[in-house]
Image (cartoon, rainbow, N blue to C red; front, side, top):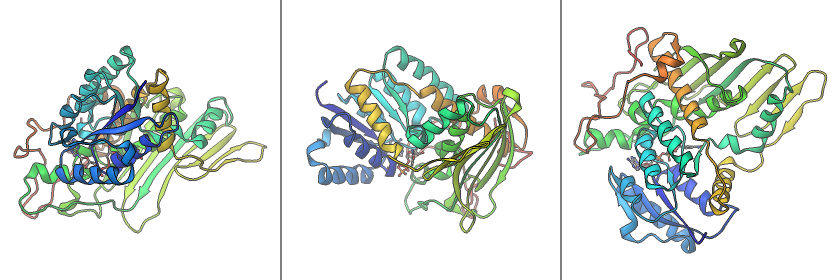
Length: 402
Ligand SMILES: NC(=O)c1ccc[n+]([C@@H]2O[C@H](COP(=O)([O-])OP(=O)(O)OC[C@H]3O[C@@H](n4cnc5c(N)ncnc54)[C@H](O)[C@@H]3O)[C@@H](O)[C@H]2O)c1
């Protein structure tokens, strides 16, 4: 095909990174960023400047293809872009994904694909439509595209460590960014700026961040999802207005149907603590330790360990695959797998918020829809701070989490 035109929705850190990976893809250099969209003018302006300065020959962003506002994705989809990169906060992803599928464009969708069960179901329905239309859908689980991960997990599927007995996964890190409330902001603007800390936008960090390792856990299990989960978590240190309503730690036991294999998941965002971004599986004949962005060690009984060092960054290889598929008319769709990982993470959040055992079936069919009834800058987004500016968070044993 002629020049492949890219539209970017969500011009933040990952959106800019994804667009750069897209321009640098190895399948074709004939790609251009021709449309950008963001809720906020400053994000659009910064992105237009960055790409115009750094990629002048691959950037064509006149004012009429710069879209700002809460309906910016809808506006961008009316342009003639071939592929859209959905890198906005995850709460908007089901809405924007459905619209992108309806527009007939190819789609890169960052993880997670939703923050609640109705969103996952909407994503799945639209993804079936995308498959029928032969639209390419690539969900940004970048570890799936790293050689150390896909080569070693293939060996596990072939029986290298025997039958799996248990899995451990971690995303333990310090605080991330915050965007404290500014004078004159409406509640809706504050929450969308500081999106990480509100469930309707991020799904909590077990969904937004730990979903990477949760996806690897399901991948160990040959893309099965768990049948139930129980867990605990809370907000121990990160209690202040800028930290919204999410927990700072979660610990979940997932149960898989096959031989009741257990997956133990931990995620924490607290400064000054041990950190790990890793996945581990133990079988009847060996084990594997995978460092998310480091080394993978596969140890089989009676053999020397096999070691993989990290090679190409999956954020780049996923774009190489996406553009190869577009350029050469290949089919590609990992939407259902992405949706399963998101739903597994939501199941974990339901378990930690409620303190109860939650079954996959009841979680998946939950009608708890976190999206605001009305989306407008002066509308009520839902979560409300108290007089000190602190937002309430879930309480185990009390909160109805699904
Ligand atoms: N795969 C990875 O390794 C990875 C890494 C980081 C983030 N992510 C994912 O990328 C997405 C974005 O994260 P980020 O780190 O870039 O956050 P960010 O805050 O840096 O960027 C988000 C951008 O979206 C904009 N935005 C808000 N509401 C919008 C709307 N309705 N429509 C369009 N734009 C809107 C914000 O103004 C901001 O510019 C999230 O889904 C996150 O989970 C993935």
